[in-house]
Image (cartoon, rainbow, N blue to C red; front, side):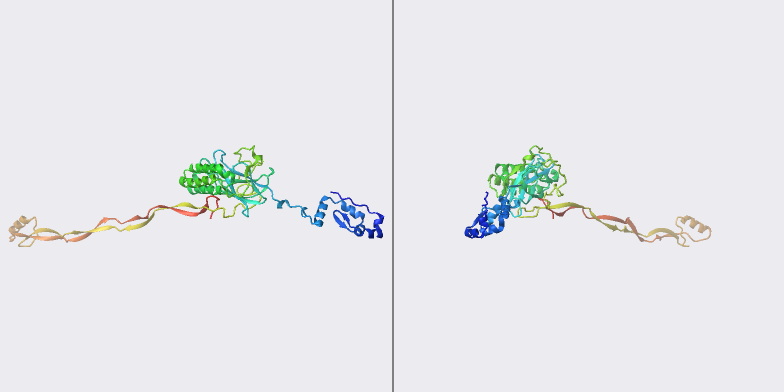
Length: 424
């Protein structure tokens, strides 16, 4: 809009003319000025005002006239409601688009206005619509592969931005856990988390899609020999029923694959979808890998009511050897009694000599020599007195006696959440 400045004549400058026109206001840029004000300002200043663009006019018009339809100042882009997205790539070594389950991402904002779960592919950049700018918490329910292997849970703070296909996005790397290392409790916890996710799932987790996701989790988890098949079937069965109801408490727009990554390989975990090589550090590192975020936020998600920790005891086996003590045994003895040893002797009745075994010769010799020895008698003589003897039965010895048998003890070293990986 252009407002023409009327010509100012000499008559108008003179006092008489001014007084004649004094009662008539002069309108410039939509504002009324008295003729005296115009003359005092001078044509030069008014012409300079004309050089100001339409924006200045709009500002003047709004402030002067009170027109509420014209903004006083331009709005900040940060204050505008925009269709913002989270640009993500979840790297999972060994994940297969045909046989593995999807990754389930839990998206939350600080004030609870955004709180939903969505199923996304791994090793491929995707965008998730969140509506407004800001930093969001992203917690991942790890996928399960066809062989029953899975990954450690991870979380990240992710800053929303415009979907301009120029953003590299946030890369979260999941640490793989081989099938034989996954515990029964871990597998059951994943099934429970899937059931909870469906209740707040977007269109990827409701209806037939959601039921198919729950069934895929059930099939892959049950392929792990450590799985509690009944418990897993119970939880995933709940998820399937909830999905089929096609109802959800999710507060979110939908999720879509980022087209800028369409030409990439589904297993190209070395690229983040923008052609830039990303770090391959394990979960929990800094930068764009692990649980790091492009906004530099904390790598660990604070506990909220949306996530209930499933604490699983972490144990180790401690072996205890058998316990022994030394017992001394003295030598063993017994008492043996020996009777007295007695022998019989022949005693000469005349001279009293002991003639045992020599009786006849003694008598003959006595007769030849004028003696009177001619007879004898027997007497008993003790050769050895009776006595008791201590006889050793066994030698002394030391014996190792077992006090307790060897045993293995299971010791609890702490607790770990089976879904998010937190410890205590």
